[in-house]
Image (tube, rainbow, N blue to C red; front, side, top):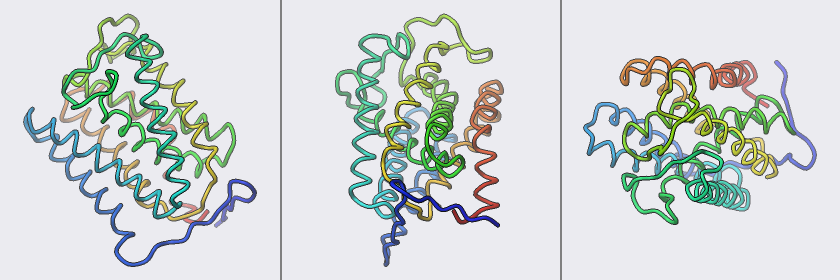
Length: 266
């Protein structure tokens, strides 16, 4: 078994806190998973509340894990980059149609700032954290992390957009070219996600790296992948969405799973 250890500017081993604090991210992750399971079985009104709840708990799971394992300064940087970038690009997107196309948020997701629901930057941030760590674990550092992490993050939207459009969270005012089997979402949206995901991962990868136990983000990324494939294929009757997401996310997830299992230490 080989052990990979980073050295240099990006290397910094984090210490583990004691007492009950290390369990907080696990509790939040458990609440997120439980809420998402209930979401599939719930009615329309309950789904709105559960969507907001699970985004908040997932975000807090990522943020608290980052703080407990990587420290205040790292977490402040991660939150400033992910939340600031997400809100800015969504505000530009709704105002100019670039880079995602012509779309509008509804009132379903709650309060908004300049047309962007507050929940949306939280969703970007919650998922960016495990995607960044998975890419760093799988490919090391540099441009490879940006490409792999960005691809993984953007591939998540193959599940997210069809689901949220069907729930009325946002709508497309015009749809031209589309991916086969995903008729309601313009291809420009997915290409815009990919471009912005590369930029976001590049920014986040500038933060110093710390070698710590990443059980919570590993659990959440694995859950998001497996549960979305199952939900799209079985519960929502969207086999093509399930196939697109399974393949595009799986290109990264499956070798990442193998790396995490075969080399449990860095």
